[in-house]
Length: 242
Image 1 (cartoon, helix red, strand yellow):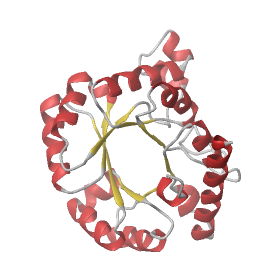
Image 2 (tube, rainbow, N blue to C red):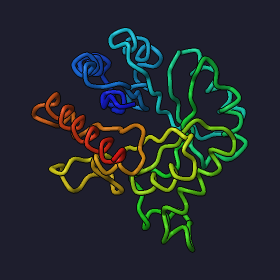
Image 3 (spheres, one colour):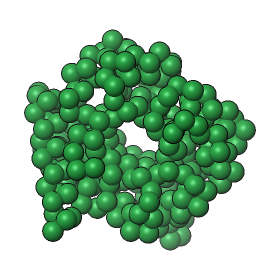
């Protein structure tokens, strides 16, 4: 994918469907995939998927981070397949069997993306959650281990921060790599994302897709910000091919 538009995912993180559709229509020329997450899906349900698809014709990423027993995950994936979405997230920490059931239940070209470790978590969070030893001090090792499990059961891709994606892409080049926590050089330094990177860094490290929300949504000129991100993606692709 050399077209930077196709690398860019914009999360429709709105509770109001009209607002989500406004942003989807506005950004369609610059965004290849729109992400529908918990906020919009809980409020509007499958209607949100239907209307965004009709409005944009873009790929749809249903980001529900399914984390439940295998039977429940399987049933949810079958329903998601019927919506005609392109990507669906399942949390790796739901375990091997749940991941296996998700892969088996996916139909119609639906790709299962395994969420490894949320980009909002740091070492203090991991310690509080009970992680210790090498995984506490080497977050990339934990993410690698989770990615190994995901690919071993047939998941199509993983979601990780840019800090870990290079090692994952080197080991498992067939995996689709989706990287959230993207921030521009002039983005505010503090929000709830702690393992962040610029678009250039993420693509250079091996990201296939970038999830970029707040830097675009909070920009005074969202279109100009999209174009700025496109340029960073182009430069990273060129740098990788030198």
